[in-house]
Length: 173
Image 1 (cartoon, helix red, strand yellow):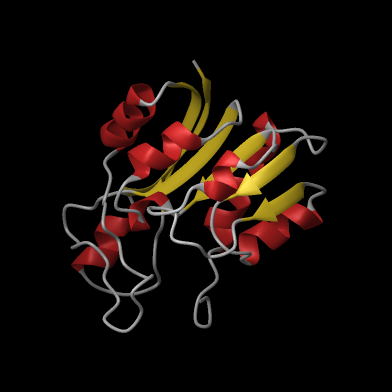
Image 2 (image 1 turned 90 degrees about the horizontal axis):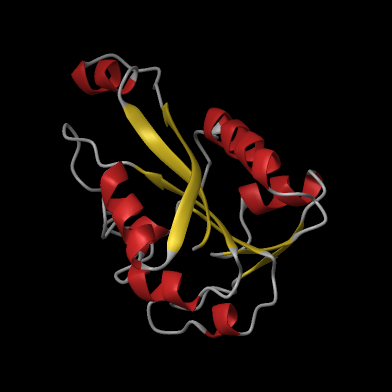
């Protein structure tokens, strides 16, 4: 997945945000299969279990059967057709979620070769906030950051000052 580029800035800021709100003594259910960031969380002392690759739009058993203190959803909600259902099924009282934000100068991402590597939703911050509110979550903290790229052109220039990522810590209301 990160053969050419590794998102060092995004992973560093995500870990800092996680450490700000979640103690290492709390257990985490990380939505999505094990990935480089779930390994980073484990190296930082967190107890992390991942979902196993099931289609979360159709099967929320891992959420229903989890006793984790916290659910994390890093860069996964944009791939789901129905994040509303997922948010309603979470039993934990704490949630950390991050998304790539919709960029007006860039179309929604769609891999032509990998059905799982497509963005169905390209959220703006207010849309994610509203989704969380409608599903009974209260936002405690939020942060945004840019994702500059080392290329020349109009889009790379716009990426240097346009927020690309949005992360939220929420608790059940």
